[in-house]
Length: 408
Ligand SMILES: Cc1cc2nc3c(=O)[nH]c(=O)nc-3n(C[C@H](O)[C@H](O)[C@H](O)COP(=O)(O)OP(=O)(O)OC[C@H]3O[C@@H](n4cnc5c(N)ncnc54)[C@H](O)[C@@H]3O)c2cc1C
Image (cartoon, rainbow, N blue to C red; front, side, top):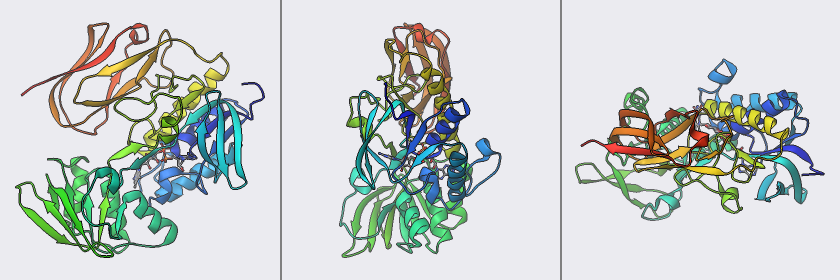
């Protein structure tokens, strides 16, 4: 775009966006802008009062808030144009962004745009949780924002729903700020976080029920009781003063949904190729917006690689090569990247990232034009990261598909 205000506009100043911007500056790109609606960089890490953050990318362990400050300091030092309190409200096909800022609605034209808007937990409404609508029903992110930014702990005896890594973050936040969860429930048959981590609630004396579903919330003004159907089919009512819905992340992709850019089936994030580029080649994406949800370190490293791909792309005409979609069978839930561009070698993603929707035993395989090129037997667990190297011939193939043969 001639007359652009920026070489690259990065939307979102969490680990992925900051890492991309740092890498762009390191590779000599002059005008790199980060736009974030919050008052500081750091993204979701800012409200985490616990560790571990930063080990892989900075070689030391930070608490979440300190990690966010480190990102802000590094971005300032690198000469990145940081624009806080700037919400991007629309993405133009030509890289023209519309922004809501403290000074009013403005526009910013960029030669390339990186979308790094992260992910969010599903709130009660999206989970269709039944019952009254009293005060005291939150997600982990909302709870941590209350605690970190306002010094408020909104309940003392919440029930925690979910068993992902973030659910353990919820337990730590509760215990560290004077609340004691009455129980933790997981609708699935097994905890979703890895075994050593799920010991935490047990060590803290918090009852942990798998195969347990929330069926009712009662309370006149604030939460008073929650009824749960347990794995054996019986019902149990917990007396509590809050409900914490944890995990069940979904990409924060509303901007993409409202644009002409393509969303990926399965992940609900933007459809990208192996350089992190969208169907419109002016746009790139990285971090948790691609697929909920990874760690801060993973988002940082992914952002850095996409930043390097954007830097390389700035020296070329925008890539108009035809794309081939990567297809998959259930119970595979998502594959990232979801597109390959013909003739173009992967510049940011060496592997396909897959997730299963449920636990399944059997053979996962990858075929190119009907020929099997990779296969592995496994006991595949839901929401665990699976990496499959992108085969060298994949960008030339017309049909790319993951198959699954389930064993009884
Ligand atoms: C409760 C919780 C606990 C966690 N604990 C850990 C942990 O202990 N260790 C760990 O490694 N990871 C942890 N994580 C995960 C880690 O925080 C994320 O992986 C990481 O922050 C993702 O980085 P990101 O850059 O993709 O997105 P985010 O960090 O989510 O950043 C996205 C940014 O985009 C901005 N944004 C979104 N939309 C717009 C818009 N339209 N306009 C302008 N700005 C916009 C947001 O304000 C935000 O700053 C935790 C996450 C949560 C929620």
